[in-house]
Image (cartoon, rainbow, N blue to C red; front, side):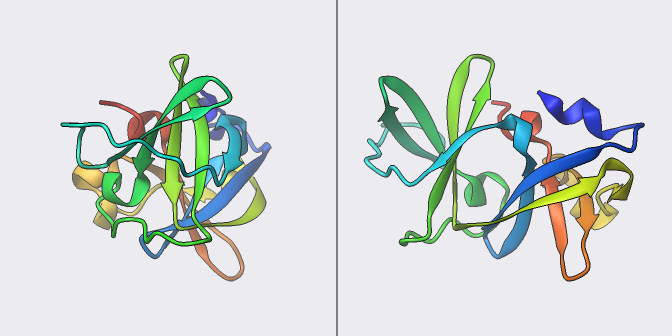
Length: 149
């Protein structure tokens, strides 16, 4: 995926931002297939606790992950603002269930700072850095790490 673009050059990057478990996070827009609100999710017996289930998206089976649970935050609160961010990982479509979608943010790669040490450890590996805007901090997800296992 496009994670390697962030290091070493000052290029404009676009991030789709969203809220999950009270945190504002972002994913490089190049990693996103689509964002939808399709919620006919079928539970999968004995799946990991963070897997909400699967859904049929135009003939493709998509595994839906509760991103809040996966990141160690509060689980996604079910409501009308929920969205699935569909990403492609190793020829498999994965849906990241989030609380709500925010803005698309354009930033220079130089403005992304390393993730602070206090979000280190097991869950810290899911973040490749932090983007400071005038009003907020955005945790930039390392999408390949999030989708492992």
